[in-house]
Length: 264
Ligand code: IPD
Ligand code: CA
Ligand code: CA
Figure (spheres, rainbow, N blue to C red):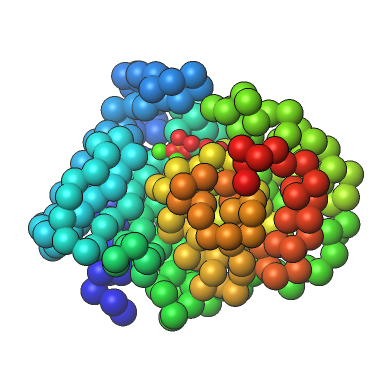
């Protein structure tokens, strides 16, 4: 195993343990609001710091891009960290959240780890070496029909300007699929897609730390990821469509009919 994957796994497991120990006294946590509907707790901050400490003790020269503390410059390697993806769920005791850690080398993601501490599910991906769940190889589903597909999504609650376009897409896909889930952790949505639990996924305005590990998982599990223009510029827009080749194409065709220029 890649030594850097080992460190990512160790950091994710330690982080998951911290999150779980804090989940018992969630009501006592100090919480602050970053923006409307966007909260940060002392758990997010402490967990992020712990992940960074573990990484820095092995790789002091590497750069960091972390949700709560931002960018720390370094060499060609950058660790992209979301210490707790699904903070709103965590705050409500809703059991769907995870740690997400990715490693980029000169801008290309080489390693992705997503850890769900509640279910003890560890999703890993290594560029060119495939994706696993708890050490077993995973693949995206082989679903070919939209009408029997189960999709995941996230609501654009931070972007009211995109809500009308989003709701048109949502309506169309609700009518054409077997179902849509909004579980509240984009990292787990992508990990579930990589295991075939979901057949497709789309979301508007994600940040790099939400999707970096998940996108590699999907790709290494045989799936396709693009932005809403069928390109790979989701790092800029944060708009993502993911699925196996057929599902990705089918979702793209629906989205294409409803998007405004600002979503391209
Ligand atoms: C959020 C979750 C959610 C997605 C939001 C993200 P956070 O991350 O991934 O599913 O819809 O866009 O911000 O804030 O809980 O780390
Ligand atoms: Ca997140
Ligand atoms: Ca987060």
